Length: 506
Image 1 (cartoon, helix red, strand yellow):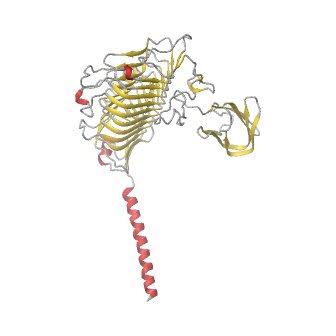
Image 2: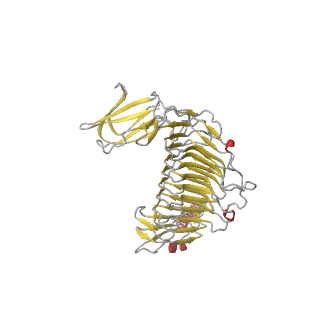
Image 3: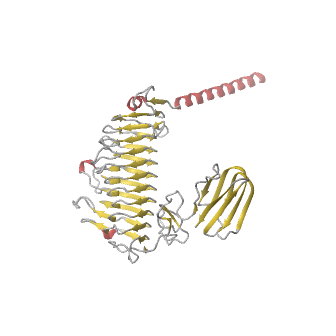
C-alpha cells in the first residue's frame, strides 16, 4: 500500500511537472513576438498593411527600399509589457523619401520607432499625434537611431512634428537641413518627454520648439550646430484651440536643459512665454546675434502668464564680435524674476570685455576668463586641468549627468563637461586591434584586445615610470584614482610596435 501511494504521488508529481512545462511553453508561445516583414518581395508591401494586423509584442520589420508616403497609421498600440517595434533593417537603406509626410501615426501607445531615414518631405517629415482628441493622448513612444533630413519645404514644416504626445523619448537621432520656417522637432502640448543625445545641424526657425501647454520636458546632451533662429524655443505662440491642456495659461513650463553643446545659431536659447525653465550646465560657442532672448509672443497677460521664473546657471558662454546684443528682452516679460548664477562668460575678440549686460544681477559669475578648453578650434570642449570652470558651479540635485554621461560632482564644473579623464589618442593605428575604455567616476582605465605579449608602462609628464605591466595579454585594468591631476602617458610595446596614449586627469 505504501508503495502504491508513493507511485501515485510520484506520478502526480511528474504530471504536475509536465503540466507546468506545458503551461510555460504555452505562455512563451503566447508571448512570442511575430515579425511582420515589409518591403519588396515580403509579406507586406508597406507599413500600413503590417500595422493593421500588428499585435502587442510584434515587430514591423521594414526591408531596404525607398518608400514614398504618406502612410497613415492609427491606434498602433502595444502594452506596458509588450511594446510594438517599428524598425528598419538598415538605417541608411530603409528610406522614406518625399511625399507630404513619411508616416503619420495617430494615437500610438507603447511603440518603438527605430533605424529609419526620413527625407525630402513637403509637409512634415514624420507626424505623431493624438488625432486632435485631447483626452486620449498618444503616449509611451520611443524614436531612436533615425535620420531626419533635407526638407523639401521652406514654410512652417518640421522634420518631426509631435502633438499631444506624453511620456516619450527621442534619442540618438540626427536632424539635418530643416525647413527655413520650421523646426527639427516641434512639440505642441507634449508632456513628460526626454530628448537625449541627438544631433541638430542647419535648422531653420528652431532645432527644438516646445509650446501649446507643453511641460516636464528634459533636453539633455544634444549637439546643436547652426541650430537656426532660435536653437531652443522654450515656448512660442500657439492658437488657443491647440493647447493641451485646454486651460493652460503658459506656453511651456517645467523645462530642463542640461549638458548640451551649442555652436552658432542666431540665439541658442529663447525663453518665450515659459515658466520654470532651467538652462543649466551647457556649453555655448559663438552665438551669432544674442546669447539669449526673453520674449512674450502673447500680449494677453490677463490670461497667459508672462515669461518668468526661469534659470540660467552653470553655463560656459564664448562670444565674438558678431554679437549684436547680449540679451534681447521683449515686452510683457518679467526678466527680473530670472535667476542668473555661476556662468562663465568669455569674449574671443575683446580682452577688455566686462561680461554681458543681464536683466538681473548675477551671483558668482566668472567674467572674461578663458575657460581653457582642451582644443577650442577642433571643438574639443573638455576642460584643461587648470580651467577656472572646474568645481565652480552651483550644485543642483536633479542635474546628474554631463555630456558624456559622467556624474557631475558637488560642486560641479561649469559647462557641459565634468572634470575626469581624457584619453587623447583614440585612434590606435599602429596597434590596430587594441581598444581602451575608461570609467571617469571610479578613475579606472581599461586596455583590452591586446593581441600579443605586451609591456605597458604609465609615465608622468617628466618621464618617470609610475607603474609597469609586463607580459600583458588580452586585457589590463589600471587604477589611476590616486594620481594627482595632470598629464600622463601610457606606453604600449610589443615585439614589433609601440604606441603612446596621452592621458589627462583632472
